[in-house]
Length: 433
Picture (spheres, rainbow, N blue to C red):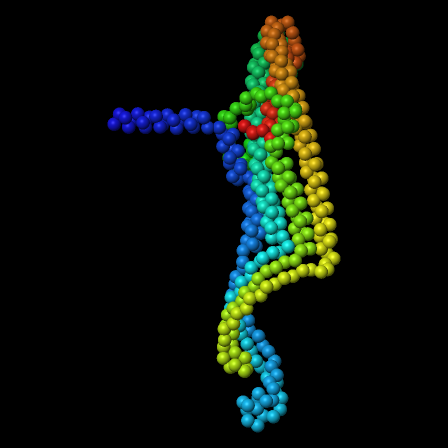
């Protein structure tokens, strides 16, 4: 009994530890990949490409089916034959109401279609692989969007906290000024200034609270949820700080970005498409077998079974559109080559731009942190001097506003650095947190 209780306790502890280690941001990413409409559309495109590949593979197999024919024929009956059946008949008669039916099985076996079947299968196979890589690219983009939207919620929330603290400070300052006014140590004008500071702080709090709600609505929209759904914000705003080099990031992007791999697949498919169109210059061979039952003709007056096997060969001697189709396929191949080169240049530019933005954002974060420390110290000194009557209210309010601005700038810089790193990791093909 004690052993069972210990085992149950261990299981509960392990479950609680696992739940404690659960990363809400990772769960939201998984939810977005399940529900986001862009991802679902990419999956549908991939399924469509896979179906076309299966259809191309099925063309290699024989085709069998049942058929039924019912035919009306005008038959001319010879006088000699008719005289043997109808005594006294000596003129030619046309039998115009003859109907005949046939029912049977038909089997078509492709032997060689000029390479069209194989080339079509190769084209659809490459297209299917490119569509799968397109799903990977879409999922990475959604992951980045979720990370940035999550950081935006936390950034807006922290700025709201700064504004609320600024409101508390402004209200405390108003209380002090009111007390000093009762003692005749300050003028009514200074009281009005303190009240104006409180009003401005209240306005800033309202704006910050609205920014938080808007960020939450955008996040829920990204996950295809109700806009007012609850959001767990316990995930850290930053992950392990990592140093990057532009050369390594560019090299990794060219080797890892699924968009480039998909472009290479499409480029190969364009090569195969040229060969597919050129297959019209070659002959094709197939075998057809038929067999079944049919009713009799006028001579036999009875039904009979029948069968036939045909070897079909075809070759197009002249088709002007054939050459035009080959030329068009070659132009499309050249166009795809240009698109791929442009895609490579764009990714290199994105990596460079995101790297420079990250470097700048990190430097701005350091500067903002130092400015926040300086403003905090200046406000502490100004508060003591104002309480001792050394400085006037205007000087103290300037220090208060500088403190609020520095705190806001610090939060802006902190989340800008985290977002810039996430964008660099996306551009370089690294995994996102």
